[in-house]
Image 1: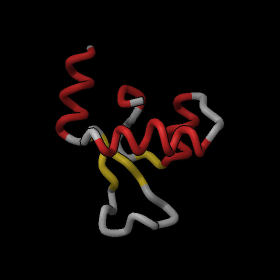
Image 2: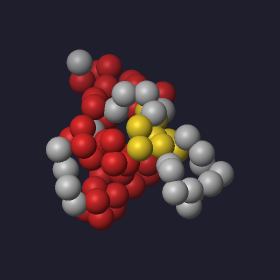
Image 3: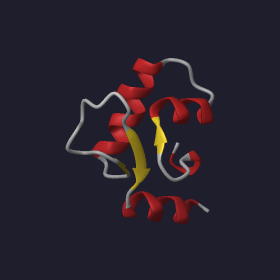
Image 4: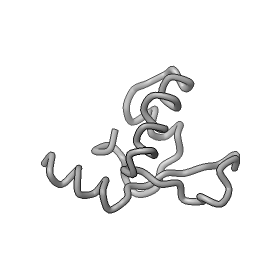
Length: 69
């Protein structure tokens, strides 16, 4: 997922890039895990219930992607 993230992307844009359809599974198992590990961050962290959230890589996420080539 981290390699497919380009700039800031919404959850639906990420799911399309990954070819996934099950939003609940993606949100719980992939997105929340990446957020908890500090690989992703929300563009509006002070509005976690926003209807238009977007996500971007953190420094740790950029480092992980660079290390994976």
